[in-house]
Image 1: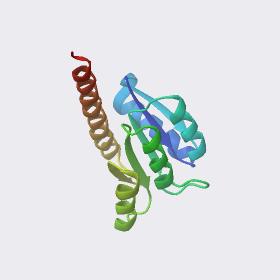
Image 2 (image 1 turned 90 degrees about the vertical axis):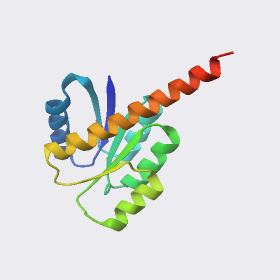
Image 3 (image 1 turned 135 degrees about the vertical axis):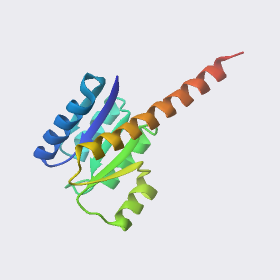
Length: 141
């Protein structure tokens, strides 16, 4: 089963995302949420996630900082950014500094969310297949 960690400091956004993902993906997706970056880092140290999606603007640790740290902990996790700001410079920073795969602007439509997450899950699966193939190759005498 695929897994996603969603990080946003607004409880109503987390609830809306969980609802939308449950409707779109059902039981095929394990969805965990955190309301701040510090808790999210703790979870990323304990459990592997296929996708980590974080809000840009959060207190203590913003989304770019969080996703940069997530990349160090789980380099194979596909990272996505959410923000209400449709700002090219911020998007470019997120891509360059945190290796963000997709940038989702709020408010999103259920179709946009599903499309971006489907692409992220496909990317995660592709990376996992490549890792698995490399492991099998190294084990062959």
